[in-house]
Length: 144
Image (cartoon, rainbow, N blue to C red; front, side, top):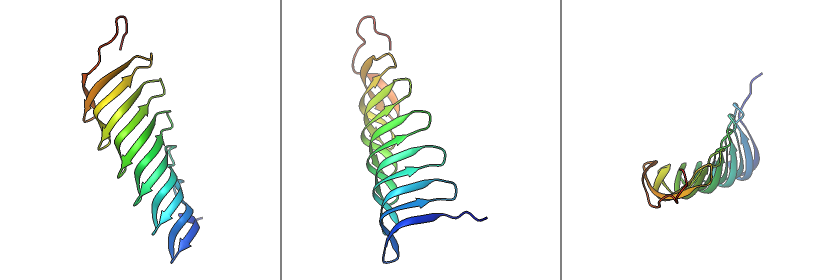
């Protein structure tokens, strides 16, 4: 038995255009809007390993506002540009930690706030995905 990629949806002038669902051989699938055979507009992409992205697409790339979830409970909610986190966004860990702030080229960059699993929040500055300094001090008795 030969398992093939398959598309179910609208065509226009022989191209995927409008709403449709594409399923790859490995079980990965995209359901949403298409334009000129590319994922374009709002849609949901489900990888075979359980990751899911729901949001906007441009030229087969995550582009615009979206939510990306991992099977282990991690989640990013915010802006994308050409498949990378870009602009404002929030990253959540399953233990309650979170980073809310600026992103560039897929990494934390600029000002943001980090919240620990115990609920302590501090403002800081990040460069290339690493915190370089805190902008706010801990209150007496708080542990970060």
